[in-house]
Image 1 (cartoon, rainbow, N blue to C red):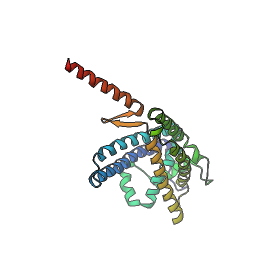
Image 2: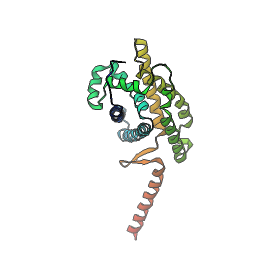
Image 3: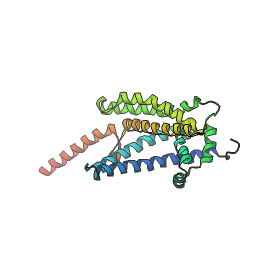
Image 4: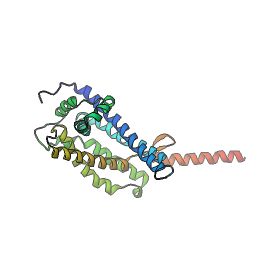
Length: 246
């Protein structure tokens, strides 16, 4: 630990926050664009690109809200925890990591110092690995309640989300422990990679099914205002039609 570089926690917080938002955009654009193109031009499903675009915007907005709220309330531990997969990526695929590093400004040495600053490395299961999740868990429950209120229970996977939430908490706590306890053998590295993959899948499912946002006509709206806006638009169209008839 004595060989780790000295850091300014405020500067590193800004750097990691920037990297988190940037990687969210890069990963989302890559995944949803690829899925939309494959579905439309290979599977011949018309409108897939447009649907993927709407899903991407909703996903980015929902996850971006979590990042923003968590960075405001619990910035250091949150950023140290959610950047752990990026640290593992640099640890396993150094060549590709260097390419990504030119964009997200990630530095493995500085991140290691930041993680030690954020978490205690004296215990494998420290409560700090759970505490940082409180803002995101509260936000997830709030988003789920909002969707149920405005979309109804039939359009919300309430039970599945509530079952997935404890699993996400455990996976995130376990994964974030690798920020200060670097895998020292192939078995530990495999555990870290599998945990990162499972956490990413579970979190993506929760984010998609609790997003309070929807994209309409290249505008981001809350799901509760969509119906009202549509009714108002239809009323306006009928009024214009009546005026033309007169």
